[in-house]
Length: 473
Image 1: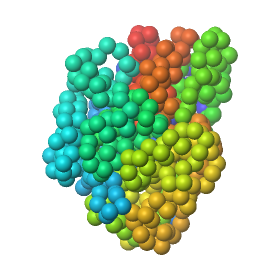
Image 2: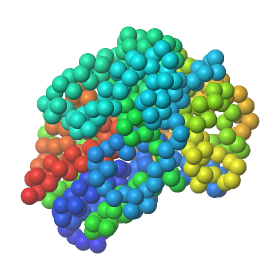
Image 3: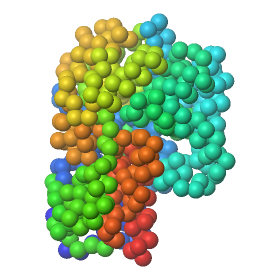
Image 4: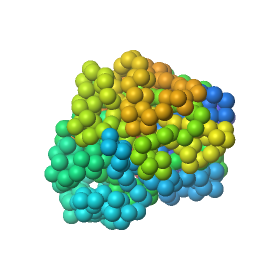
């Protein structure tokens, strides 16, 4: 398992949060061992040849606005360890049936100019967050408490606590911009009528103007590889193919940090917890899942709306009403006939992803937790709706339903990719009032099931490790 019998800290799981926790502790001069159950590091931040030889696909995460806007990631010399960001000309395009598209450019000014009658409203809503990001980021990317900038957070909260549907209809007049915001908010994997769903739409929309929506050159695996390389330069160790079932299997250590779901934490340490804490972990709501598709293509996607050909990410789902219906359905027991689709086309901007003249594409839609329904035809029909001829380009495809995703990564419970449901209750109690700490003084939770939740930003691991260091001395 390891080269030593004793470490200052052992990290279970090598996702970006586990690696962030390990780096934080190693930077403080402590010995660290990371144990990964699978044969490859990275958790959801991995890449593989899922379709044909020569085609590189991202296994889970693909586009990384939160990575480049993360204060923790910014503090690391990851470029020196092989990580290179690629910024598509446009962050996001949202096509409509009339052949037009609502677009988010890295430039706030260009975005507002392109949104027509809603440009001023967009500037008022998103621009204020982007302009004040440095004063908001530590509060937004950490556990909820008394904010360091109360007035700025209060202004953010006035919009953020609203249902996404309400904010879209009260702040924007045009169908295109309402749909654009609905697509942003749908990253919450919650019904858009739920209170608080506007928050995620506001954050990921604003960070487009702060740091962009880039992809990692060569695939998302390069993020995990760079984090691991830096950790090893600090003296940290990483072992793969080691599945931890119990604390008893670990080397002697002062602290154990678990980059696992609450269910995984129960398996590893549940026997050591009081019944009340076990019950709280068992009640944790994992939320909706996803059905994922990857394609090897013979050419670029023939979007009707020209801006889509310049965007790294395309949100496919039509109007606000259509997207809201799809998200309501997936959060119950219904697989939508016309799902909202999150789509990425990395090879347009990173030619290392596919052989010359060919392309890759990545997409998923939201589905009920644990669903095994094959959504391939429904997803491809939605793409064909806005890019006629898409299906003629397909050389090969890879599909994964919720159970397959969970089998490959135990943290994706029921196929959920956000570390748990983003309900208001779980935003404040994630996964319990203890957040990172557990009833065991030396055991911590550092996964996306802790604040600030899902996304490749490393802040869950950083926050947990900071608390562990305070106790380690």
